[in-house]
Length: 471
Image (cartoon, helix red, strand yellow):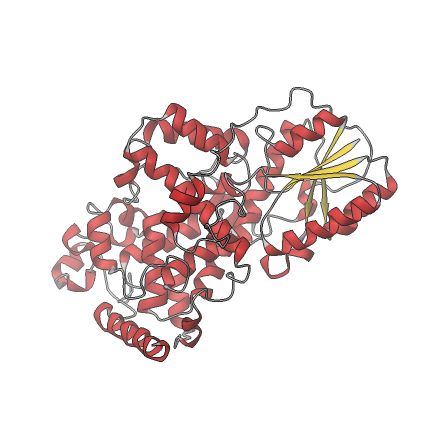
């Protein structure tokens, strides 16, 4: 029998490794929760909640034959091939530095033991070593990466169907029950954040179909408005591999209408590729600034500010709405992600590490490549980053992108009766207006923890200090 090792490819369709294993003979499907090898990058709380439900759905689709293990994957695979009649081990590649190192060791061990071993690309449209500049170096700017590195390379392959010859092994090899993995330590929070999601391969396909039908055409502009249904919300499904990027790419092109919406959406898939390219070529970006000059940036530490930001109690309604959306749903719309990121690293002068860590624990789609690259982007210290002096104003951002306040009122219900004129700056509302809306600043809703204009000036001064040093 042949092992297919499920990792971030929790699906049957368009799964190159599973397809290959099925062609060899009986397939033993396994999943290993390897926190030991992951170390500091082991999954956060929200990701574990999603993983629990995803493994449940995958096991259902495999007629209950998925074997689950927990521990050092190298030792577990070694034990399996020593104790059972296994002829080969196959998997789809992952690109986190710790996984690359571990997988190379496993591959070498298997070869030394005369095992068939092969890995496949099941997660990216283009492998990180494909979109390179003419001199063989990696791109650090997105537009040439996408236009010259990606679009001028071979196009994304067509997705494959489920293997029609999949014969699942009945061998008794042990393993654990799903509940024994303890992926749901906080049951109340876990139940709440997952309730509006349909986890699994079928849910991923349904989400893609709904987006193509209802959101893709207006995606270019609509994706900026968090109350509109013009975002795909596919990121958790892509992260866990419940749907492949090849399926998303080709179905969007085949079923969607050509135009700016489609082009912009495909480009967003390109940004995902760019993040993985950066992580592959610059493996230290989860902790180290890509631009060295930011090593001297005078970040501030303030636990009170950080806690207010994490819990949606900053006194800036669009920021608070976004942070509460994150905690309540395991997701945050892209425009608010930029707003809250800017507020943390610029208005509060907090290190982007704090934001990266909180998102890592709270996002269903917490992805080492995307999370690291995105936080470095918003902090101004990464590749093709937003200039540090581009500071989002949370008042004008709210007024522009949530004009009627429906998003903000949903997540900040204590302000739901406040007139739109004052919704994003309640401190400017006259006392009688606040009273009629049932709002008491500093009590029912916090006063702003910083002044937008003053904190902006402070951020620009901090940036000038490192700019002067580097000039």
